[in-house]
Image: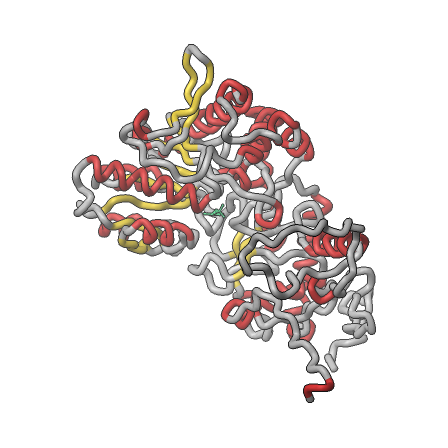
Length: 522
Ligand SMILES: *Cc1c(COP(=O)(O)O)cnc(C)c1O
């Protein structure tokens, strides 16, 4: 038994809750939901189906010999199953979601209303162009917002997520290098150590060599180390700004100049545009290509909530390589350039059809309902909220770097030194307190990292409760209550899981238990 069970907590307010074993497996009104196949009973059916008419067999002996194996369920069983599953999906609509680097943004209901309008929702990508002029105009307006906010002349809307946008931008860079006749020599891509994992993965997937640049003591790119790495074989740098430590790269203009002078291109990971939209135009920083995660900056759902969308803006020197399709407007209205025959330098097509239309509708709705001043305000609030959290926590937790942060604040595990509590234990204890943990152990350049990004739409009361909860946990860790942390989470349907085994040996397929052996055959 856990020593801390039944003990009164430090402030005397609430008794420590013992883990409860229930007969049903349910915990309070949190249901323990079996797999749908485990619930099924052979022969049960939610609807009355007519007897199928007798037909002549025409499958030449290829008919199924055994039952399909679908679970037999009543209609209420099906409804309950999916309703319960939906309740297990923690979302920004359910509570504060402080995941750093992911920008869990509130998705205003107005966006959903617009996306569900039949004129958008019921479109088919193969409809004649004359019947989708409104949709193309929406894509054109969205492009206009993105090029205006970034100061970049061209945009590719089709990439399906941030990482896909990186791929698009880096393939464009490769196309530009090929056009210069330097494909055989310019093969190295510089990636700061603090980069998001997708950056080196993208460069490597395209066939570039990845060369890491160290971070300096301030958590920024070490410019001297960068200079030493520049040469005629450098194709590009992939740099995130604000970087994954939540810090603005103050030397970015100098970095862009150096890379360009060496003949390379500047790919900026713009997933964190939410921190600077309306305040900084990437074009003014010397960027050649940058993806924008609509699902992070312009409030469309992501993760379990829906598909992402990763448009990429291009500088003038990359614009000729824009992927198809893209929207153009001429005397006859809007049309799509669909084939490389109409765009000979284009890098080609990245995706079936034109991109995530539903995301485009949500993003433009967000932009139009906020206006340019509102987009800027959202960036201000994102930065303000993160700095508020950092300022209120830095006397009890250890900030990884000095000075103000951008949209997310980064702590390391020095404050847990000698407490016997790890970053993982701390995160699990947060779950019992009703918080999805922050991003843990990332970025890798910081030991035991805890990266907190509060959504800009959180109220001060909600941020205060979050901060006070973390303060109380930090105090309990320092007071020697390591057991409390090691036993967490206590209040979830499942306790501490073997995460390594789950990742290494995932069980992805349900298999029926072996049928009982009939008596006669024993
Ligand atoms: C989220 C993120 C990405 C990847 O975006 P996806 O849409 O998840 O593919 C890349 N870089 C950074 C810095 C990010 O935060």
